[in-house]
Length: 166
Image 1 (cartoon, rainbow, N blue to C red):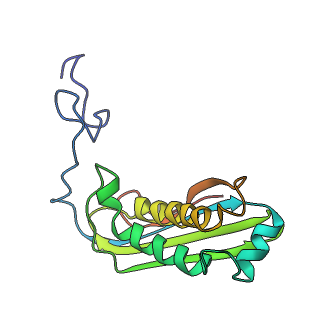
Image 2 (image 1 turned 90 degrees about the vertical axis):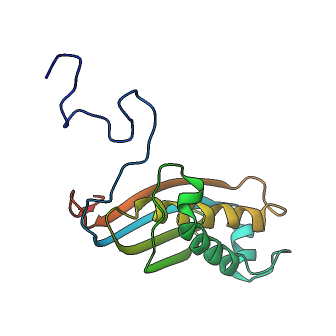
Image 3 (image 1 turned 120 degrees about the horizontal axis):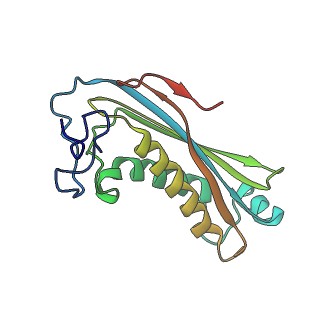
């Protein structure tokens, strides 16, 4: 090995020999059970949260529409994130919790599969689109809403093993 040729441990995984972005070949990796959970929040005025709680927004059932949007987003992650592999998901769950202390809605989503690569991006996508849909459903009432704190909180499976945010 020469000084200008990095060893495999230092090589970027998503670039080819010329430095161009590429999709990683996972064809030789074993399929294992994968799980990931992500979360995020949308903050809003208390009266907006109350309208969501009582299902009195002009657009209707914000929580129901947002949950379905999040599930659909998880299933379409590889269409939106260029280097993600299309995965056959075995489960996607989206939970929305109304939180008067924010005030707003906390969203948690999980994704599962058996595959050679993980599902962190699918969980993040589910949370993100759920939050964006809540914004869309309530924007006529509250333009001050703010989406944030989106992160992976847990992953299981794969070469790097299990991990949980402290």
